[in-house]
Length: 137
Image 1 (tube, one colour):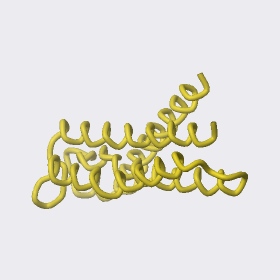
Image 2 (cartoon, rainbow, N blue to C red; image 1 turned 135 degrees about the vertical axis):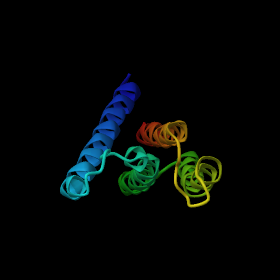
Image 3 (tube, rainbow, N blue to C red; image 1 turned 180 degrees about the horizontal axis):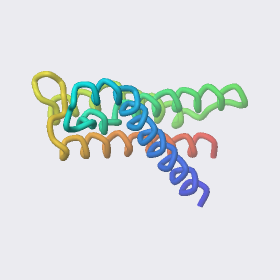
């Protein structure tokens, strides 16, 4: 049950950070948009969070391994799992999202692609949290 609680808390924090980030983006350009009489204040890129979630997951994974290794010896399986997640987060996830969901300029162009990219980033983040729970036992 502790794993589910940890993953639930991670999900709530990730969504809260994403919502806060979107609000801060809007607030930071509010005056400029009103002066230019722009009809819409939000852009699709304001709702793309997968890269923040993948980077957060990678930092958390490094923290899990380093903090656990300072307490006692980390098992080989935990090191292999951590290294595998790091490689997955740095290579196939960004390349796959960039190649499959982005246009030639590297921007996500439709809401379906933004949703899929965000789900991939969130799954990666939750996988790292589950792996961290495994490392800590």
